[in-house]
Amino acid sequence: MEHFFTGTGQYVASPELMSAVNVAITLEKPLLIKGEPGTGKTLLAQAVADALGEQLLVWNVKSTTKAQDGLYVYDVVQRLYDSQFGTGGVDDIARYIKLGKLGEAFRAEQRVVLLIDEIDKVAGRSQSGSPDVSREGVQRDILPIVEGCTVNTKYGPVKTDHMLFIAAGAFHVAKVTDLIPELQGRFPVQVNLKPLTEEDFRKILTQPENALIKQYQALLGVDDVKLEFTEDALREMAHIAVEMNDSRENIGARRLHTLIEELLDEVAFSAGENGPEPVTIDGAYVREHLCAAMQQFDVAKHII
Image (cartoon, rainbow, N blue to C red; front, side):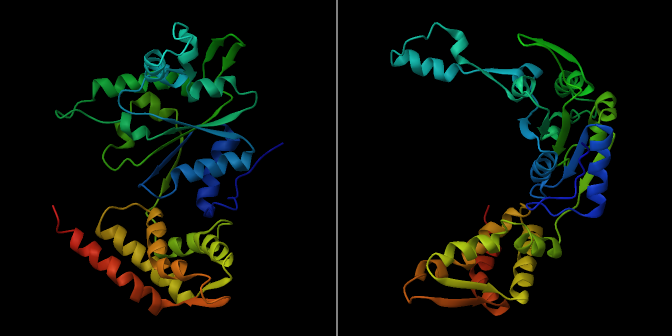
């Protein structure tokens, strides 16, 4: 049965994005997602897994990662803790060896989507401008796994070429070209997630099944508060989110969580005190109640 990615109830995808993802799915080739923090890289990987009806496993890598770390992890802290408190079985090392995300992928009975997150952390150059030897070693550890290899396990040989690999990274310091050529070649399909615009923020607020607006409407509805947002309120919130991301640290869509929490603080505090009541949030209300947050934000820029 063929699967095609058209977005999900939790992820609104553009036609260009759907096209690129479907190329990777159809050709069964690894997919590389580039994008600033908060642009939804992990959320996109989860949406692809949901569309395929498969489990998503997230393997976070860094400059010191080895393939072995993905296969299994030795929990030395737990073993030390057990030895201090006299817990039995401390001599049995097998109790403290846990499967990593790669190991879980190998043991999965069905095909999985494996996300290699923050792959840009293993790309980079030394101060002299030459390739970083330590990071190159990490990439060469990852290379055979992504290329497709056979790993012998107690359940028999397991091939990795049946897994759908997705790699994600911000690449705002390192570049994709800083990866070794062999690893670059293993990701023929690349998606570049652009910084979120005001229109993107407005869609995030309203369109997903569990959009922030819908969550707060349901939450306050428990106290008989009928919460409504006007169109100009949504535009104003989107504008402020973009402005704050541009002026300070860009945390993408996460900015909306802090803004709407600040915006509805008074409403949530007094909810239910006056019985059933309608509350309408308009543009003026947004500007008035987020003004203090913006002023604190401006002052924070000058604090070292």
